[in-house]
Length: 115
Length: 113
Picture 1 (cartoon, rainbow over the protein chains, first blue to last red):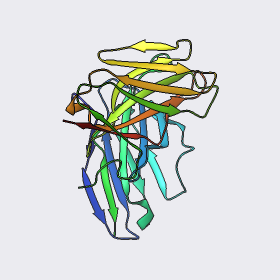
Picture 2: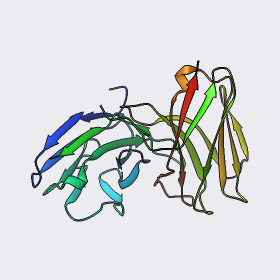
Picture 3: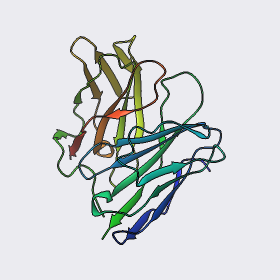
Picture 4: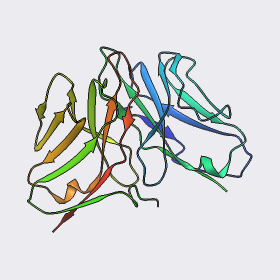
């Protein structure tokens, strides 16, 4: 597709359930990022992939959060035993390979609501 | 639906005036900076970037100024239009070779007709 695609756009789940959020990056982009954005705040870094490997997962808040990118393209963010505090917009971004310092293109986000 | 920026600092400007949005960044080693625009219900959209070896960069109707001495970044929008109404975030990366973008808290720009 032309841009970063995230599905679903909205997800409502019950506390304690497991959820998966999907990201389709721009074709050819080797770098992929997950961010979380709470109301009234800037996006907060979660994890960064270069190819298939997680180059930096320092932003994952705890071990309930996990992300994969098995073939170096589509990525899935997985959240186990969801809590109400996990409610936020989860943003995915991708950028092309190359020298450091290139813009990241963001998707529309998945709004996760834990009830 | 949810609205980005309900509790953010707000800058109100008259249509046609120039806007200046400021940002203080945290890491003196940061080498690359981006301004993003975010409209309600959408992901951040790239506006303009600047590298640390520059102090000014111009785009179409936008200019970014970087003052490394005081770790300050500003975005100037010329002839502000209603379509410029959004939340604006600055983002920094660390030293060369790092890809993590650290976002500021954002400023909501309201354009008054």
